[in-house]
Length: 238
Image 1 (cartoon, rainbow, N blue to C red):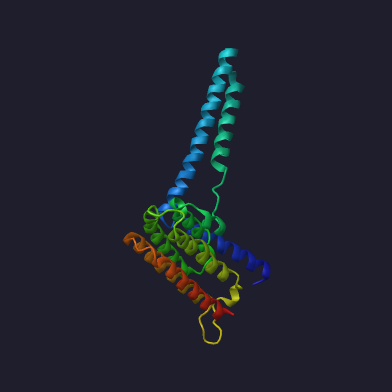
Image 2: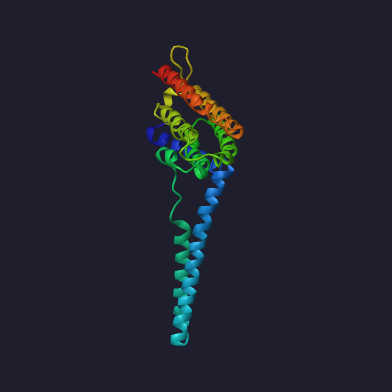
């Protein structure tokens, strides 16, 4: 297969995978998307009402707007609805914005970020990403109990805003041809990614249970343990 044909094939495969994984991985991200959609729908409705009111005023002054007035109004309504529903596009969170997100929307924004990463991950990771979305849905109500300035809030943001993105970014930086091969009998990058995602899923579950029990002091210990775990993974890759 020539290089150009391979590129076309890779682009088509990535598109199909992104289409396949277009669904939300959790209820929190689905809620944020619905909110964004309804805002655009509201703007479209306001634009339509504005055009109709304007046409009515002009028609009252001129004793009718005539055929071309109707056509122009219809065009304005159609164009306004198209623009209102097309723009603005929903902003995709970044690791930098995740760390600064308020606790109320942190879970949903993390899910949206993950949804935009999963088509670039190996297929076995899709199931784990879905499980992480479920855990984030369970974590979200517990986050409402925290104050933004509490150490626990810092640890949660660090888990989903630093550790998770660093794991995925580190994997994506490895050439595709090297991701399935381990060095010196060690785990391959694919296997390390899956292990890291599973660990983060368990950590989110543990954080949820700890907050629910009011055991916030242990969160910092878990955060340090996770850092040590990743440090080992980094050392094994180098």
